[in-house]
Amino acid sequence: METMKCEMPDKNPPCEEVVKILETHKKIAVVGCSPKAWRDSHKVAKYLLEKGYEVVPVNPGQREILGKTCYKSLRDIPCGVEVVDIFLNPKRVPPVVEEAIEIDAKVVWMQLGVVDNVSAGKARENGLQVVMNRCIKEEHRKMPPRK
Image (tube, rainbow, N blue to C red; front, side, top):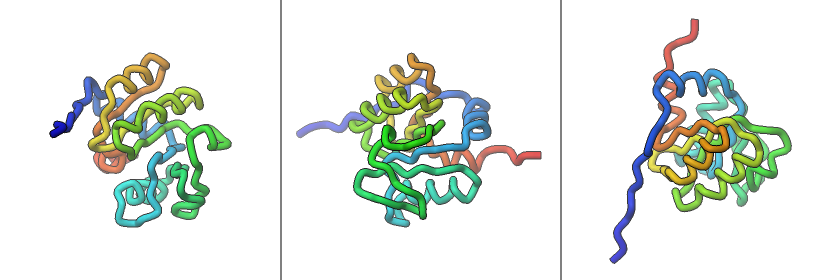
């Protein structure tokens, strides 16, 4: 019987840096975005849209999600994105991080339950900020109100 390996983040940015990421970067690719309204990826993408972010869904099996054109991969997005929000099994993270580096994203954000320290290290080495095992929606909700 194979034991499941549950990786924990080797490091995450402090809360102030997470707030700065959410205040500074407004164009977010949601990788693994689902067309199914009950899925977390769909709920998060919808929330981000409602909060004024530009959301770009990435799911090779879909053409449109939440009224937005859906792309097969990060490379297929015609205009750059700043944050790559990943809703995938951790085993599927490495090629997404490679693409995030290629397209000059600024941040790789791995949702709750998604951790890949090796890929995170590679992203950091290439100048990207990395957040792991955190929900972007919940982090946004915790932000202090703007004046």
